[in-house]
Image (tube, rainbow, N blue to C red):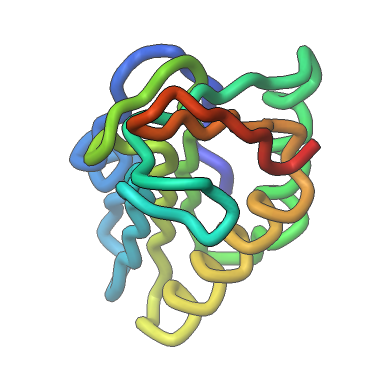
Length: 137
């Protein structure tokens, strides 16, 4: 069951995602929190921030991606951030609960990989010297 999907310009709350997927039949919950780091192989120097942009259909696509991995006894909550994010800020949160840990881990990873590959969200990396480059265009 998909309990939450969002594309947001507000801070993401990992605890709220955990709360959203909690239920009595859940024996396991996997949580992925992706944060902005200070380096990237495609950046010309130290990364100071990322600027995320989204296609108007990004929320629909995110929900479709979540539905593509959904199964009985799952609960899924996933959000992706847009706007300017500094190093250390949360860019994506994915929480998956299930009856067993293997399924929670497997579905969480599969969904995050699908989002990275297919969600129409792009990022512009900004480095210390002001150099920028786009990722995902």
